[in-house]
Image 1 (cartoon, one colour):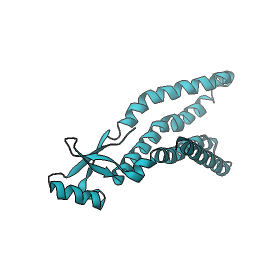
Image 2 (spheres, one colour):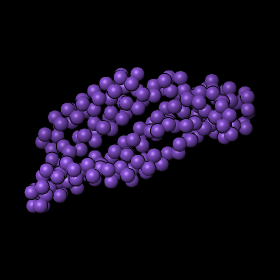
Image 3 (spheres, helix red, strand yellow):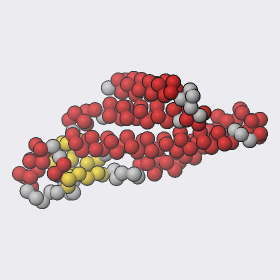
Image 4 (tube, one colour):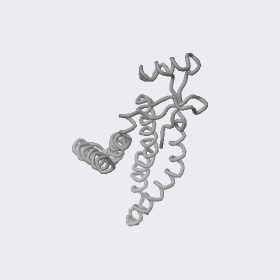
Length: 178
C-alpha cells in the first residue's frame, strides 16, 4: 500500500510538473517557478487518499460526544481526509508560492548576483522559517476531533443510530488524522 501510494503520488507530481512546464515555456519566469507547488499539491491530492484508502473503503470510527463508538462512516473518512489534504497544501503554499517571488526580487540586486552559491542555503533557511509558522497554522485549520451531523451519514449508519438513540444524538465525532 505504501509503495503504490508513493509511486502514484510521484507519478502524479511528475506528470503535473512536466505538463505544466510545457505550458509555461512562454509564460513569465515567475509562473514557471510555481510549477513545483502545483506538482506538490497534486501529489498530496493523490498520496493522502491512497495512503488512507482503507478508511475510505471501510469507514472510520464515529462516536457520540461522550466517546461511545457508534459505528464506522465512509463519509466521515472522506471529510477528514479532505481536510488533511487542504491542510497539507496550505502548509506548503507560502514556501512554494511566496519564496519564488522573494528570490526573484532578491536576485535583481548586485550583491545577490555575486553570491549565487548562497541562493540554495538562503532558500532552505526561508523555507524553514515558513514551516515554523505554517505547520501549526495549517494543522489548526480544522479541529483534530471533527463533527458531522447524523443526517449527513450513510443511510445504514444513520438509521442504526436513530433506532438505538432516537433524536438524542445529533452529531457524531471522529478523528480526522494528520
